[in-house]
Every structure is written in structure tokens, then in C-alpha cells.
Length: 303
Image 1: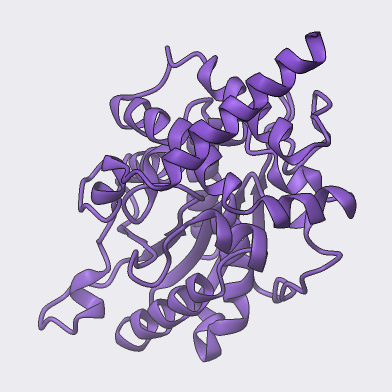
Image 2: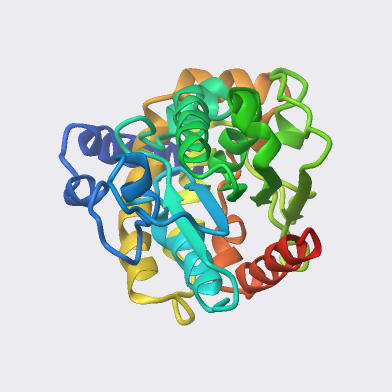
């Protein structure tokens, strides 16, 4: 009887999620918004060829993570931009990767090991910026799937690669992808700045703290339950809004890829799917401030 009850409960969850696939999510309508909490467009004047556009000393381009709103997102990109804005002794410009080129959906992460279109868009933006601002130094940055995009973009920079002083990544998942995806090497002259939450372990860049179910539907149910129980006390307003969206979007998009999830489980790649709260904490636990300090220190050390 207990087994029947569990089966019925699981069937109910699957039915609920399947219905969700056909239901529009209001958050989708605001993913491309130009809200300062989730978007950064400091490069626009240069990229659009505006006369009199100012070149930054240090130009940072950020690739957001899966499910993020705007072009940098509220979880890590927005707080990182704020941390960089506090560095008033260096003229810094921050730009997010185009939402038109990079949807930051789960498919780009699970099927491509980081969106290929994101990498091309990022590389194109850097080349265009450097062509107008040849003296600017560039930092290529990303979080989660955006970190994979940032790695891949190193192969899309052309001659602009000479201006790139840093590849910065938060929660970099490439260690669980390198057996199936070839990422470009970090070139000489570019410093890798990598941040991984280990105190409360981020399973995408260090060993997970708990075992997860090996059934695709049970795994999705467990992940959804973890997010429903998360403490939002230290989140800002944009992150709290994103939390509500994530609780819907994560299981919905995961359910649409049950076949891929089953394959990854069979091949020992379940860690790729462990998008737990710890993976989203870099904009909350102070890591973005440390990263901003490290980047500015690196820039100043070259001048």
C-alpha cells in the first residue's frame, strides 16, 4: 500500500509538471527587461558606434546562468556589477551577453555543455568593442552555464584575445563536462579567476553534500522540494522574485528533457543536473566582492 501511495504521489507530481509545460509563465515576459537589477548595457554606446562614446579602462562582459532574467541576471551578475561599480578609481564598463543570442535555458546547458550561440555572441561583442577601444582591457566573465559560455568564447575572440586579461567564473561546471566537451585552453596573458562555494558545497564545482535519487522523475521532485524549502532571508528583491520563477521553470524545463536526464544518469553525469541553492549563492555570500577586488587588483598590476 505504501508503494502504491508513493506511486500515486509521484504520478500526481508528473501530471502537475506536465500541465505546467502548457501554461505560460509570467516571468518569461520579463526575462529580457532592461532592469538595472538584472541587466547591464554599459557597452551599448560603443557597440552601436555612437559618436563620442567613451571607452572604459576595464570592460567586463558577463554571461548569466540558466534561468536568469535580463542579460546578467539577479543571482550573481547583478551583485557582481554592484561590486564593480564601487571601484571608483578605475573606469569600468559592464555588459551582459545579448538575450536575443542567448536564452539561458536548460537545453543550452544540458545538450551543449554551455550555449554555443552565447559564446559566439560574447566573442563578437568583445571584438567589436576592442575595434573601437583598442586600449581597453577586457574581462570575460560568467556564472554557471555562463561560465561554460565564457570558456567557449575564448575560441571566438580573434585578435581581440590580446586585450583579454581575465577569464572569471563563478560555480564553474566544466569539471563535470570535460569528458564530453572540449573547451579552449586559457591563453597566455589571460588570468583565470575562479570561485567555487565549498563551505556549503556547490555540487557543480566540488563534491555534492548529499546523494540524489537515480530516477529522473524522483530527482526532479527532490530538486523542486529543495528549492521550495530554501531560506530567502538574505536575498534581495530581484532574487526573491527569481526564486518564485525558478521553482516553476526548473522542474518544467527538466521534465521536458527526461530522456536527456535519464541518459546522463546512466552515464554517471547526474552532477551536471544538481542545480541546488548552493550554486546560486555567489551573489549573496560575498564572493562577488572578493572577485571584484581580485579583478581590479589584476588590472592595476598590469599598469
